[in-house]
Picture (tube, rainbow, N blue to C red):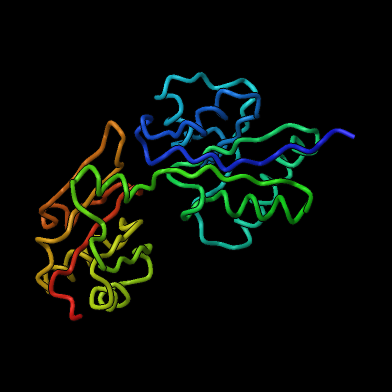
Amino acid sequence: MTPKGCLYGLSLGPGDPGLITRRAWELLRGEGLWAYPVRKLGGDSFALDIVQRAGLAIPETAIPLCFPMTHNPEILARHWLTAAQRVLEQLEAGRDVCFLVEGDASTYSTFGHLARTVTTLDEGIRVGVVAGVTSYQAAAAHLGLPLADADDTLAILPAGYGIHTIDQLLDDFDSLVLLKVKPLLGEIVDLLERRGLLPYARFVEKVGCPEERMVGDLTQIRHETVNYLSLLLVHNPNRPK
């Protein structure tokens, strides 16, 4: 019997090809089949773009897997199942599959949904995760700012939890990493202004990419429609201890 292949979550970092780890590079150059996420069939893949900018050619056998931008659980479940079935066909034929992941495969990644669906269909499938650099780690490094120092506390959350939650967490943690800030950016800027925290906040868009942008004065982008790949780093030096 042919041994089943392994499904790898291949973390590529947030955009800079130089942040691809040696382990990820080895797998990219190996015999495993590439699979990569797209928002719609025929659309672009940010994860694939990172690898291309690293100088690697896309294998003709690479498989695009569609994961649409929606919160509808029925639509998402249907696409996860379709993607898992395509991947499982290759795994059960004995071939490793490397799913390309922007950022880190363990952090707010589509890979977790894919891996769970695949292993639900076949419990015998092995899953491996190759760790990667997250967008907020890269952003802090580019800004020269520590995410946490000494006994500081740090919270990482999607901004979609809402302004009330963000307001509360500013008093509970020394620093916040706010991901996916696009829909609430103006409201977050207003909150930080009311609390006198604008000098301690930084906006970063598409970190590590050629289009990377960093903004210190958030009032300049209060009413701007920013890229989906945007985040805020916020420190509260006045947090009650």
